[in-house]
Length: 200
Image 1: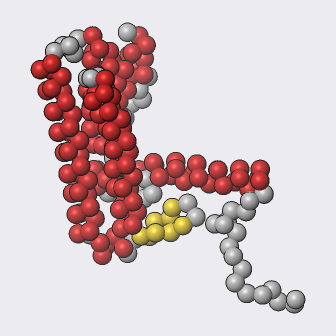
Image 2 (image 1 turned 90 degrees about the vertical axis):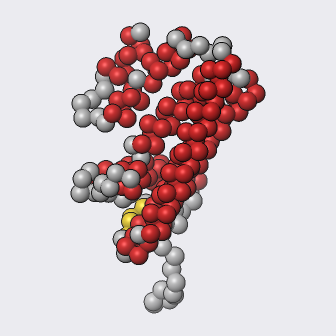
Image 3 (image 1 turned 180 degrees about the horizontal axis):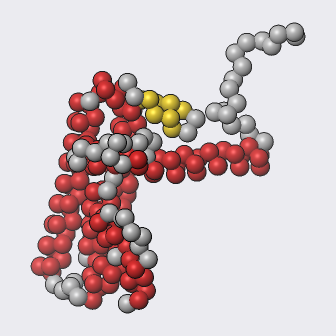
């Protein structure tokens, strides 16, 4: 029990309810394994319906994001976002973030759905359904387009968001290693020369 509660006990102050709930995810898994009637066919059917209903609800939420993004297209296209070595409009950035979130949800829910279909496992549906819902509720797209927050309310909502910064740092580090190990120049760091050099 100490191992299950350990991550939550070490949670720092100031975390949101979603982040705190994620810290308790091992306890949720233990509860699902030991306290719920997992052998009941009726319970398994109920869990399956709730899980896919949750997935469909999140899918509709993603469509809502696209509608809001296209509705604010003019304002978003006036905002520039620095992503790694490139610049893009906030419209393109938010549109890409919706696609990234949709891909992440499709991969995780598809995997546990396959486990349930092939092996009849119910536990992954419960755990993944809870985690996907909590993680989605804390995504900047939800905070901005559903809760109406902005960078004025939270510094983490300034584009690019923390998840994108982590990915860009990974990409930049990989490029630097490739250049160091294999002598491959970074095309973003080394601009192409368009004209002949003077004096030659």
